[in-house]
Image (cartoon, rainbow, N blue to C red; front, side, top):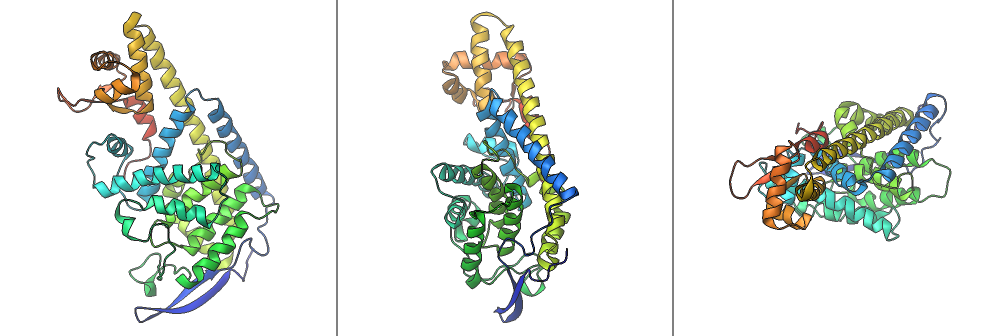
Length: 387
């Protein structure tokens, strides 16, 4: 469906250059997207996939551990889209106060993404609705460290930005002038909390495009826009655990993703965007279910192997296994504290895990040894190699 009223262009001047900045019309689109035929089937398939994910997450014996791991994988993927070079292992080293093998700013940005998500979830849990305040709070934490810390964390921009190109005049897309941002965001806030019959998945899909089109911050818009999807679905109760992250799908289909965003802005082709988004939800949810199943199988099989060691040694080894499940890269002192064992008992138990091929010493040193849960990390780090 071709829509002609997607917004308006406002002529502005940036560094002496005439620029047409796009101000989007408020949501919902008019006329509304046609949710029929194939699109309706896609919506139903996405809802079913989310239901399976929510169900398995609810019944996982190690739900908190899976959430810990999955959030960190998403943090790495979402930050890679913005150009960072850090990996899941880099983030885990950083969280252990070990020096990563990448620029410190890169891994600090990834760590801040984890903190921003957790902060947003906490605010929702305290009763704050999806709102300008929520997004500004998430952005403030996201840019608290790293390269973006000088780019107005938690504040809307006060200058013109652009997407693609070397300057606004040759940009692929120019968002609204900064003077229009407050009104655009207020309209988006009203849509997020509207008492209407828009399905929550559709609301999240529309809101993501609108946020990326407004681009209200100087930096971090892409990461906040991707977090917005998860925060909305969690707040609406579509997910009881925040386990849906589309960064890998967007990364794998980056060219099409940006093309569809621009088609919405130029022609109002919301239907093609919705088909893409719903496919991403279904594929991503099914992949998360598969990952949860594989991790559960791995943990169970390794516990069974350790239990066969017998006696007190098995008990200590099982406690060390629990510590490694919680943090798949560990030093012996930290493991000792986590498992409630003496240093000597922890070291002995870790050596037991190493003999069984569960843990691997990764420093080659006699002091300051670090152990990695290789099989766990292998599952966790799939598709997360830096670009």
